[in-house]
Image (cartoon, rainbow, N blue to C red):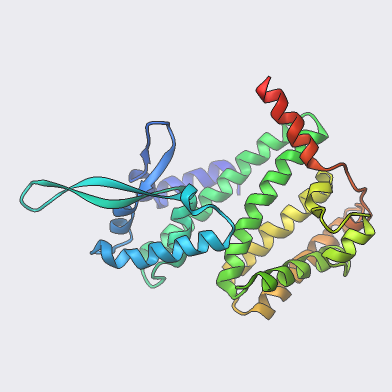
Length: 283
Protein backbone atom coordinates (compact mmCIF):
# COMPACT_ATOMS: atom_id res chain seq x y z
CA UNK A 1 0.00 0.00 0.00
CA UNK A 2 1.41 3.36 -1.03
CA UNK A 3 1.62 6.42 1.20
CA UNK A 4 -1.08 8.11 -0.95
CA UNK A 5 -3.53 5.24 -0.53
CA UNK A 6 -2.84 5.02 3.21
CA UNK A 7 -3.36 8.75 3.64
CA UNK A 8 -6.67 8.60 1.72
CA UNK A 9 -7.90 5.67 3.82
CA UNK A 10 -6.93 7.44 7.02
CA UNK A 11 -8.76 10.62 6.00
CA UNK A 12 -11.94 8.94 4.80
CA UNK A 13 -12.45 6.25 7.44
CA UNK A 14 -11.14 7.54 10.74
CA UNK A 15 -11.05 11.33 10.62
CA UNK A 16 -12.78 11.54 14.02
CA UNK A 17 -9.47 10.78 15.72
CA UNK A 18 -7.82 13.63 13.87
CA UNK A 19 -10.65 16.00 14.69
CA UNK A 20 -10.05 15.71 18.43
CA UNK A 21 -6.27 16.00 18.13
CA UNK A 22 -4.77 19.06 19.80
CA UNK A 23 -1.49 20.93 19.42
CA UNK A 24 0.37 22.22 22.48
CA UNK A 25 2.36 25.46 22.84
CA UNK A 26 5.49 23.71 21.50
CA UNK A 27 3.76 22.48 18.36
CA UNK A 28 3.48 18.84 19.54
CA UNK A 29 0.34 16.83 18.85
CA UNK A 30 -1.60 15.25 21.71
CA UNK A 31 -5.04 13.98 22.64
CA UNK A 32 -7.09 14.77 25.76
CA UNK A 33 -8.11 11.65 27.68
CA UNK A 34 -11.52 13.27 28.27
CA UNK A 35 -12.07 13.78 24.53
CA UNK A 36 -10.72 10.33 23.72
CA UNK A 37 -13.01 8.59 26.22
CA UNK A 38 -16.07 10.22 24.62
CA UNK A 39 -15.03 9.16 21.11
CA UNK A 40 -14.58 5.61 22.41
CA UNK A 41 -18.15 5.77 23.74
CA UNK A 42 -17.41 5.75 27.45
CA UNK A 43 -20.36 7.69 28.87
CA UNK A 44 -18.64 8.31 32.19
CA UNK A 45 -14.94 9.15 32.43
CA UNK A 46 -14.56 7.00 35.56
CA UNK A 47 -15.32 3.90 33.45
CA UNK A 48 -12.51 4.89 31.10
CA UNK A 49 -9.88 5.12 33.87
CA UNK A 50 -9.29 1.30 34.12
CA UNK A 51 -8.55 1.26 30.36
CA UNK A 52 -6.16 4.17 30.85
CA UNK A 53 -4.38 2.28 33.65
CA UNK A 54 -4.03 -0.88 31.53
CA UNK A 55 -2.52 1.21 28.73
CA UNK A 56 -0.02 2.75 31.17
CA UNK A 57 0.93 -0.74 32.37
CA UNK A 58 1.42 -1.86 28.76
CA UNK A 59 3.60 1.20 28.17
CA UNK A 60 5.76 0.32 31.16
CA UNK A 61 6.02 -3.32 30.06
CA UNK A 62 7.25 -2.18 26.64
CA UNK A 63 10.16 -0.40 28.39
CA UNK A 64 8.84 3.06 27.47
CA UNK A 65 8.73 5.97 29.91
CA UNK A 66 5.09 6.30 30.95
CA UNK A 67 5.61 10.01 31.69
CA UNK A 68 6.61 10.57 28.05
CA UNK A 69 3.22 9.38 26.80
CA UNK A 70 0.75 9.97 29.67
CA UNK A 71 0.97 13.42 31.26
CA UNK A 72 -1.50 14.42 33.98
CA UNK A 73 -3.19 17.74 33.34
CA UNK A 74 -6.28 19.82 34.16
CA UNK A 75 -8.86 21.11 31.73
CA UNK A 76 -12.12 23.03 31.87
CA UNK A 77 -15.46 21.35 31.13
CA UNK A 78 -18.87 22.95 30.71
CA UNK A 79 -21.57 21.76 33.11
CA UNK A 80 -25.27 21.44 32.31
CA UNK A 81 -25.93 24.81 33.92
CA UNK A 82 -23.47 26.45 31.56
CA UNK A 83 -20.86 26.98 34.27
CA UNK A 84 -17.29 25.71 33.84
CA UNK A 85 -15.37 23.45 36.19
CA UNK A 86 -11.75 22.31 36.28
CA UNK A 87 -11.33 18.52 36.05
CA UNK A 88 -8.47 16.03 35.96
CA UNK A 89 -7.42 14.66 32.58
CA UNK A 90 -4.39 13.16 30.83
CA UNK A 91 -2.38 14.46 27.89
CA UNK A 92 -1.92 11.47 25.54
CA UNK A 93 0.71 10.89 22.86
CA UNK A 94 -0.15 9.01 19.66
CA UNK A 95 1.53 5.92 21.14
CA UNK A 96 -0.60 6.26 24.28
CA UNK A 97 -3.74 6.35 22.11
CA UNK A 98 -2.54 3.23 20.29
CA UNK A 99 -2.12 1.41 23.61
CA UNK A 100 -5.55 2.55 24.79
CA UNK A 101 -7.42 1.18 21.76
CA UNK A 102 -5.49 -2.07 22.16
CA UNK A 103 -6.72 -2.35 25.77
CA UNK A 104 -10.29 -1.04 25.40
CA UNK A 105 -13.56 -2.95 24.94
CA UNK A 106 -13.09 -4.89 21.66
CA UNK A 107 -16.85 -5.37 21.21
CA UNK A 108 -17.29 -1.70 20.29
CA UNK A 109 -17.09 -0.89 16.59
CA UNK A 110 -15.32 2.39 17.31
CA UNK A 111 -12.51 0.47 19.05
CA UNK A 112 -11.90 -1.55 15.89
CA UNK A 113 -11.87 1.68 13.90
CA UNK A 114 -9.38 3.13 16.37
CA UNK A 115 -7.11 0.11 16.07
CA UNK A 116 -7.22 0.40 12.27
CA UNK A 117 -6.58 4.13 12.35
CA UNK A 118 -3.53 4.01 14.61
CA UNK A 119 -2.13 0.97 12.76
CA UNK A 120 -2.43 2.92 9.49
CA UNK A 121 -0.81 5.96 11.05
CA UNK A 122 2.07 3.81 12.26
CA UNK A 123 2.53 2.37 8.76
CA UNK A 124 2.40 5.86 7.24
CA UNK A 125 5.12 6.99 9.62
CA UNK A 126 7.22 3.95 8.69
CA UNK A 127 6.97 4.77 4.98
CA UNK A 128 7.94 8.38 5.64
CA UNK A 129 10.88 7.18 7.70
CA UNK A 130 11.96 4.85 4.89
CA UNK A 131 12.08 7.78 2.48
CA UNK A 132 14.36 9.57 4.92
CA UNK A 133 16.50 6.42 5.24
CA UNK A 134 16.99 6.08 1.48
CA UNK A 135 18.21 9.68 1.37
CA UNK A 136 20.95 9.11 3.95
CA UNK A 137 24.40 9.36 2.33
CA UNK A 138 26.61 7.22 4.61
CA UNK A 139 26.65 3.75 6.17
CA UNK A 140 27.09 5.29 9.62
CA UNK A 141 23.96 7.43 9.28
CA UNK A 142 21.98 4.43 8.03
CA UNK A 143 23.17 2.40 11.03
CA UNK A 144 22.06 5.10 13.45
CA UNK A 145 18.67 5.41 11.74
CA UNK A 146 18.01 1.64 11.75
CA UNK A 147 19.24 1.21 15.32
CA UNK A 148 16.80 3.86 16.55
CA UNK A 149 13.97 2.31 14.55
CA UNK A 150 14.80 -1.11 15.99
CA UNK A 151 14.72 0.28 19.53
CA UNK A 152 11.27 1.71 18.91
CA UNK A 153 9.88 -1.44 17.32
CA UNK A 154 11.41 -3.70 19.97
CA UNK A 155 9.44 -1.69 22.53
CA UNK A 156 6.25 -2.23 20.55
CA UNK A 157 7.10 -5.91 20.12
CA UNK A 158 7.58 -6.26 23.89
CA UNK A 159 4.13 -4.76 24.47
CA UNK A 160 2.46 -7.03 21.90
CA UNK A 161 4.29 -10.08 23.28
CA UNK A 162 3.13 -9.14 26.79
CA UNK A 163 -0.47 -9.11 25.57
CA UNK A 164 0.14 -12.56 24.09
CA UNK A 165 1.29 -13.91 27.48
CA UNK A 166 5.03 -13.23 27.54
CA UNK A 167 4.99 -11.56 30.94
CA UNK A 168 8.22 -11.95 32.92
CA UNK A 169 11.68 -10.71 31.94
CA UNK A 170 12.99 -14.28 31.65
CA UNK A 171 10.03 -15.16 29.40
CA UNK A 172 10.81 -12.22 27.15
CA UNK A 173 14.49 -13.20 26.95
CA UNK A 174 13.41 -16.68 25.83
CA UNK A 175 10.95 -15.14 23.36
CA UNK A 176 13.75 -12.99 21.87
CA UNK A 177 16.03 -15.99 21.58
CA UNK A 178 13.42 -17.82 19.49
CA UNK A 179 13.47 -14.91 17.04
CA UNK A 180 17.25 -14.96 16.91
CA UNK A 181 17.31 -18.74 16.38
CA UNK A 182 14.98 -18.43 13.42
CA UNK A 183 16.98 -15.64 11.81
CA UNK A 184 20.48 -16.87 12.72
CA UNK A 185 20.15 -20.54 11.76
CA UNK A 186 19.64 -21.89 15.28
CA UNK A 187 21.98 -19.53 17.14
CA UNK A 188 20.62 -17.87 20.29
CA UNK A 189 21.92 -14.58 21.75
CA UNK A 190 24.77 -16.28 23.60
CA UNK A 191 25.88 -18.21 20.51
CA UNK A 192 25.72 -15.04 18.40
CA UNK A 193 27.98 -13.30 20.91
CA UNK A 194 30.47 -16.15 20.57
CA UNK A 195 30.25 -16.25 16.77
CA UNK A 196 30.87 -12.50 16.51
CA UNK A 197 33.56 -12.37 19.23
CA UNK A 198 31.50 -10.08 21.43
CA UNK A 199 31.78 -9.83 25.20
CA UNK A 200 28.80 -10.74 27.35
CA UNK A 201 28.34 -7.08 28.29
CA UNK A 202 28.21 -5.92 24.67
CA UNK A 203 24.82 -5.46 22.99
CA UNK A 204 24.57 -7.45 19.75
CA UNK A 205 22.50 -4.75 18.07
CA UNK A 206 25.14 -2.08 18.72
CA UNK A 207 27.68 -3.98 16.59
CA UNK A 208 25.55 -4.62 13.50
CA UNK A 209 25.93 -3.01 10.09
CA UNK A 210 22.92 -1.64 8.23
CA UNK A 211 22.13 -4.91 6.41
CA UNK A 212 22.00 -6.92 9.63
CA UNK A 213 20.02 -4.22 11.45
CA UNK A 214 17.51 -4.12 8.59
CA UNK A 215 17.01 -7.91 8.80
CA UNK A 216 16.37 -7.69 12.55
CA UNK A 217 14.05 -4.73 12.11
CA UNK A 218 11.99 -6.71 9.59
CA UNK A 219 11.91 -9.67 12.01
CA UNK A 220 10.62 -7.43 14.83
CA UNK A 221 7.96 -5.58 12.81
CA UNK A 222 6.59 -8.72 11.15
CA UNK A 223 6.46 -10.66 14.43
CA UNK A 224 4.60 -7.83 16.15
CA UNK A 225 2.12 -7.61 13.29
CA UNK A 226 1.52 -11.38 13.17
CA UNK A 227 1.01 -11.65 16.95
CA UNK A 228 -1.53 -8.84 16.86
CA UNK A 229 -3.27 -9.78 13.58
CA UNK A 230 -3.79 -13.42 14.53
CA UNK A 231 -4.46 -12.61 18.20
CA UNK A 232 -1.92 -15.22 19.29
CA UNK A 233 -2.09 -16.17 22.96
CA UNK A 234 0.30 -18.17 25.14
CA UNK A 235 4.07 -18.13 25.57
CA UNK A 236 4.72 -21.23 23.49
CA UNK A 237 2.69 -19.97 20.53
CA UNK A 238 4.32 -16.53 20.75
CA UNK A 239 7.79 -18.14 20.81
CA UNK A 240 6.91 -20.35 17.85
CA UNK A 241 5.64 -17.32 15.94
CA UNK A 242 8.84 -15.37 16.56
CA UNK A 243 10.93 -18.34 15.42
CA UNK A 244 8.77 -18.82 12.31
CA UNK A 245 9.06 -15.16 11.28
CA UNK A 246 12.82 -15.13 11.89
CA UNK A 247 13.21 -18.26 9.79
CA UNK A 248 11.21 -16.75 6.91
CA UNK A 249 13.32 -13.60 6.96
CA UNK A 250 16.41 -15.83 6.79
CA UNK A 251 14.95 -17.75 3.85
CA UNK A 252 14.26 -14.49 2.02
CA UNK A 253 17.89 -13.41 2.50
CA UNK A 254 19.02 -16.79 1.18
CA UNK A 255 16.74 -16.58 -1.88
CA UNK A 256 18.09 -13.12 -2.67
CA UNK A 257 21.65 -14.41 -2.48
CA UNK A 258 22.51 -12.34 0.59
CA UNK A 259 25.00 -13.12 3.35
CA UNK A 260 23.53 -14.91 6.34
CA UNK A 261 23.39 -12.54 9.35
CA UNK A 262 25.71 -14.64 11.52
CA UNK A 263 28.38 -14.31 8.81
CA UNK A 264 28.17 -10.54 8.52
CA UNK A 265 31.12 -8.68 10.07
CA UNK A 266 31.11 -7.34 13.62
CA UNK A 267 31.11 -3.55 13.40
CA UNK A 268 32.53 -0.92 15.75
CA UNK A 269 30.03 -0.05 18.48
CA UNK A 270 27.33 2.35 17.35
CA UNK A 271 27.81 4.21 20.66
CA UNK A 272 30.91 5.84 19.17
CA UNK A 273 28.88 6.99 16.17
CA UNK A 274 26.23 8.41 18.48
CA UNK A 275 28.91 10.27 20.40
CA UNK A 276 30.44 11.72 17.21
CA UNK A 277 27.02 12.76 15.92
CA UNK A 278 26.17 14.43 19.22
CA UNK A 279 29.44 16.41 19.08
CA UNK A 280 28.73 17.57 15.53
CA UNK A 281 25.24 18.72 16.53
CA UNK A 282 26.64 20.55 19.55
CA UNK A 283 29.26 22.29 17.42
